Image 1 (cartoon, rainbow, N blue to C red):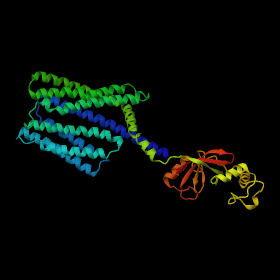
Image 2 (cartoon, helix red, strand yellow):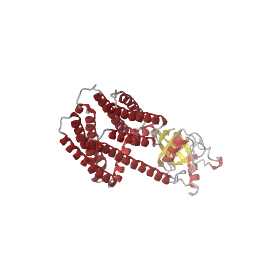
Image 3 (cartoon, rainbow, N blue to C red):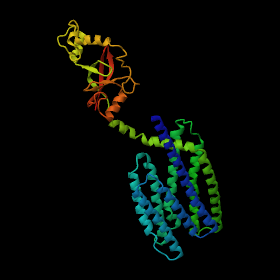
Image 4 (cartoon, one colour):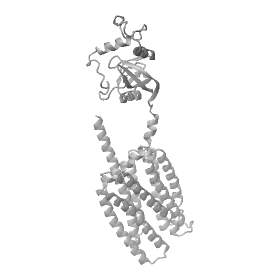
Length: 434
């Protein structure tokens, strides 16, 4: 059952990372389609309403994808719905402003900025550490996007007296951040994958990352420069049209090659995402280990005699001295486990007990394996009931779950680890408090 569960979990994890690769591909393709339609606008000078319609269509697709996410709650669903309503309303006001009557456009981006920042803080605080950095990056771009829209509306309402080159300051900044983040991701990937000599990864993925950088940095840079030249009117239109055609051809070639290489190295991308996920989880492990109870050394070792496979008799320090130095004893230390007629007055009670233990058949007192897992060597005695015959792993599992002895169900206060054996006597040197 455990192996089947592990296989199911591994399949679900691989499926999740495969979907992540698909989302990365869809995001890049959506950005390229936006740039594609803007290039067509600059070449053929068609009405801007077609760009608005395309933007509505993309908003609808992203809204459906977000709503299909099973992990999203009702509150987030309402917030995303409100955000998309504002986005669509903003595009409608743009059409009204340029086609019907000039209106104040900056109110909707201001409200949208407030909602986006609130959603950003909520998502960051409610995600675990392994996914938090991805959420921060994604929502940071959303905030930058809304700020850029706000600057554009101020420019359209003549409240921002700067050129389009200066108005798109947020876009230029985002392109610089894109370059920095993707190069940093490339360096991290090289350190994690190639320095570890993973056989699943080869140099093709380096080419894919470089290609990814080009699609989100160089192509948008030239397109944005062409758009600014067009709206500023400082450049001859034929040069703008020629530059737009070059950008359009580059985007088409880029889309074809990007999809081709993504499908070719999809398995390598999944391996990279798995490594990144493991590294995000590993910092949590030391915190978990510190919370676990550790073994600590005893100042004075405790001596035991194994009576049976599951019961150990604790000896006092005085009894062990008597056993090693004297042949007679007037104090019956072990009288609670021996019958009076079995005592030999020329021997100590513990020595008599050892002789009785030697007479026990090996098949009746076989303590070679743990009584719970039957795999590991038994080395733990539970206190105060003094039942043992179990291994360290089973005792820790017992302490974590029931905190009760596996035989008598009495409460466990300490677990004693037997590390040395002196003849028939066992010496416990480590203790773990429950």
